[in-house]
Structure formats: structure tokens, C-alpha cells
Image (cartoon, rainbow, N blue to C red; front, side, top):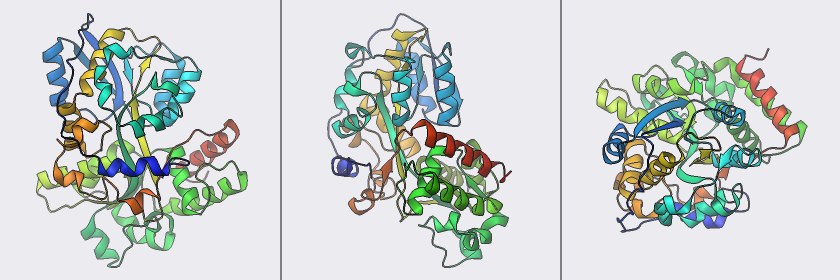
Length: 370
């Protein structure tokens, strides 16, 4: 799972609390809040409830990669009040002075957060002063079982061989394979697949991961993260390496469409990345009071349960767990069992030299090797 943190996170899949109470959202004087989140990450009903209860208008902009968000926030003057980096990216943003501290009195619902998750986030945000956990998930295999079986009845759908072994992946090239645009994340998974430390600084090992990706490249249709959900749901893709919540959203949409398309998800048996997305306030946020109010509202147990029920991403609010649908709580590909959690690892920041190697390798990979 997470290097140096395996034991304390094994309980993530087992959390269950009957608590449902929540402190009221503190008043805010500003009348708008500008947020920069992943697409499909806050249910429209939640935003409508927040606007109705507070009178604050939510302006929701989206991004498709952590690198895009980090670059924008580091440049300053974004106009955003709440942004959502991964936990591993917060250290760089804090060091650069790009974030402001939360006022604990204005986010009382943090009292319900899982201390194990707070402990992990504290490795990048000592004292949990700048980042508030939202949800977490895994990167794995989403697939169309009918189209996969038609091409390979014994396909190893719970293995990264589906993506990284050309002799297997080539069987699905015609029905479409996509990979999420996540340079550090996918590279770390490729390194683990090869038996290396996912965050190695060894240039030779990174080069081997690059070669693995380049060998897979002819079978990959695209890296458009935002298109994966709808294309899997419509049957326009039959295989993707992407995020767990996206797979379950795609599955729900496919079921609603009733067009005979199924989408399934598997955590790779070789191990994969577990990620934590956090809420932060830029240092120059124009509406800091509204930012605090919005974050605290999202942390309300009923709201966090609605987020998880809508997108199938587990959340770190212990008081919300008992409100999550049982089919989600008991799904081992959402809440991994003990034997699988031991194979998961969380993203860690890279040193500048190895980050440059990873970035160059990813650019070469996505551009087709040129």
C-alpha cells in the first residue's frame, strides 16, 4: 500500500460508524465561491443544496490532470477559492507559498475525518493545516466483459498484462484501449509492474518503464481522461487503465442507457496506486470565507455519503460510512480487502531529476515515441 504506512491504512476498508450528526456550516459573507475540481466530482444536488442553504453561488471549473492544476496554482492569481490537488502534490504547493492555512474554527466537520488518512496527508502537510481529505480511490482496469471475452475468453482482466503485454493488448486494439493522462501515476504503476520501487530515482529503471510503455503504445487509442467515462459507457472503448470511481460511473451510465453495455472494474493483482484527493485554499483566494463554508459543507456526513454513493469513491469521513450504500461498502474493488491493500501504494513526490525523466518518458509515450 503506502510505503511506511501499510498497517494504519488497512482499516480503511473496514470503517463503519453510526454517527450522523454534523456541525452547521459557518456563515460566509461572500456570495460566490470559485472551485477548481476534477470533472464529475461533486453531485449537482450537493451544489444546489449548498447554494440554497448559504446563498453562495458555486462557480465550478474542471481540470483533467494533476499537473494542469499544480501548474496553474503555482502561477498564482487563479481566481479560485478551493482547488483539489492530490495529497502528494500539496507539499510542493505549500513550500511554494501557494496555499493558505485553514481556520479550524470554520471547518468544524473535520472532527469526523479518519485519523489514518490525516496521518498520511500530514506527510506532505505537517499538522494538517493546509489540506482537507475529500475522497480516495485506486487506478486499475476497467473493461467491457462481453467485448473482451469475444476476443479472448480467458483474458486476465485483473492484471496489468491487459495493458502492458502487447501480445494480449493487441487483441483489443480494434475495440479501443485508453489510458488516463496521469504521467507520474501511470509511470509508478509501470515501475511496480516491473518489480521496481514505484518512486525509484534510478534512471535505468525509469528507462525500462519507458520501454514497457513504448511497447504498449501501438495498441493505445488515446489518453483523454475526460472521455473515458462516456466512451466506456457507450461501448466505444472496451478497455482502459483509469480511476476506480470513473469505472463505476461508466457502469451506472451504461446501465441507465439500457443498450446492452456492461462496464466492470478490477484492482490489478500486481498492485497499483491508491490516491487521496484533498481540498485546499489558494493563498490569494478572493473569497476565503466562502471557501471555508464550502469545504465544511462538503464534510457534512450526509453530503460525503452522497458523494460516495454517486461516484463510488470512498471518503475519509468516518461519520459518513454508515450512510454509504451497502453494495459500495462491500465491493472489494472499492473497499479493498486486507490482502489487496498490502499491494497498494500511494503517490509520493519525486526529486527534480527523476521527475524530468518521468515527464520526458511520458511525453515520448503519448506522442507515439517521437
